[in-house]
Image (tube, each protein chain N blue to C red):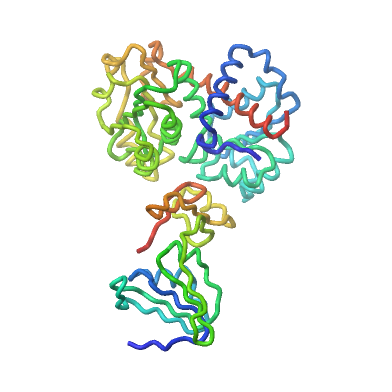
Length: 307
Length: 141
């Protein structure tokens, strides 16, 4: 049974196909209103999430399907000690497809091995979050009109930020991409990402702590939040959380067609004064996320022979 | 130093000096009732120094463990005092329940009955990663 746990589970051709489907959904929503009629998506969220869960649920409703849901570990049998595998087997009896978020890394893989229906990883701890990357890719495609030949700045928590690692992985597969990695020393991209992805593929990158100097060359600026939940030590979190705050002044030297992205939720790393700047794309990203989730649900249900 | 030759059993030879104890631990040789000898820092023409493990019993040895710890080691099977087979070891593609994932965020820390599985992701540098969280396997030598 085909599941999607990591963005690299999808080939470049499949990403292209998903983006085309998403664009078609945007242009012709009525065509898709009934395609998942009588089908059920189970959203199993064992970790707090607003937008990802709502996005999956909205996606399934807009495809004409239904949703059954677990919205916290405390509200499920996990609180009684049920294993992820048993939960996945059980839910397979009720639903046609699962979207799962879990605080532990690798939980989605465990669920996919036990389930008899497709599993979409909606975030497994700090590890993978492929549908966020799908949202990011569609945003880049729609804002830039291409997927190649650009300089992508990634800024903030590049160590624990799973969206950053997935985006590096995904964009490394396109031609003529360059990365500028902007973070405090303590939150740099892990060496295995640099070694296994960037160096192995010969992708040029620059590591810096200085956002303003890097700004003029960027085509994409991908901001991230320093996530409290990824730290074991509160002191480290407090010390690093305000490292980069994007303000209108910092954008003075930026390109006119820069695309400012953020996986959200933001705390204070992008000033609200930037929200009205035409270069701000983070709320478009949210909408794009729903369309890509619709496209992915459709693809997996079709491959499973469910629709 | 003289260690008696064995009649029926296994000799793990050409172990990189210093890795003998780690192999002893991971192969769980402590659990055996038979005689087991670990010989450290034996002078070797080929390697300079090496470790050797002699097991005085025809027990099952997990070749994957040897392939993970020291793929250049050789395994000699002895029957009636004669060498009947000499095996070179390959690095295994996957290791199941040999080492544990040390990442506290990994699903294996909470799902007690889950197998700890590591996959060879970089043969050149002998790097294994947890299949669940992709954490690199720690090598304690």
